[in-house]
Image (cartoon, rainbow, N blue to C red; front, side, top):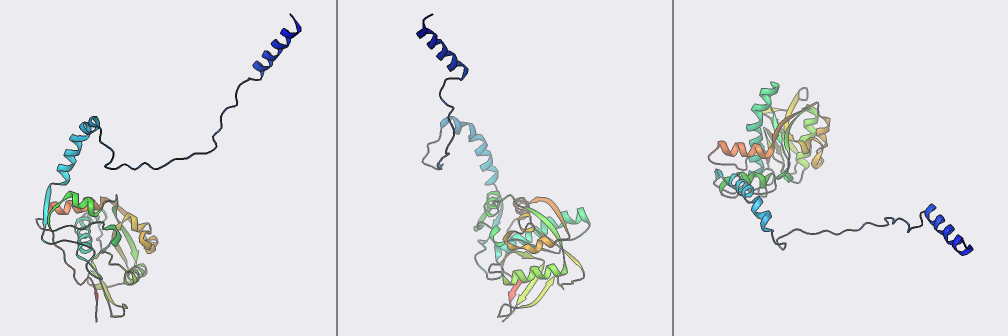
Length: 254
């Protein structure tokens, strides 16, 4: 073998031993962009045909008439309480109260929900399951928190100072023209700091949502496994007419 050939063989051997190849690529940056899915994207016939029976069945269930509302229910009218908020709180008291009592032997003393949780009006006319999904689109369920009298006082002070009418039921609050607390009662009786109270609310609020940190001082907590949306639907199915008014559960005394 000539010297030239020997050098070539040596070169090939070195390449083989040292994996003579391009270096592996390395990831330096990751970039992306948001692709909006809207009506501008034409539907695909095969997908439309597949989901049509499911969509039709869902629409049939959601749009079935459950009750009738003689007037529009909204959270936007009323300074200290609203017809929509009162309806929501009263529904929870009525529907969840018996369940809590049957499980624990205790009674729900009052209800507190949050103003921001009501996401839609209920228009005058037919009331459907779809209305419940529009009003309460979140996967929130009802919890019952046990609070001592001192914590309930903190809760009341929060409501008095709040800039929005959070839905309440079972509790009555009166403030003067300067928004100072004048009177508060629960189930018609003054707050007793020596006892505890059972407050129906949502899982969002018991975890401190909407700055309701007083719920973190709870003594006990019961998950009713009852979604707020389902509570509404069950109520609508029981009544012929959905009525709610602005009343004296939270008032200002001049």
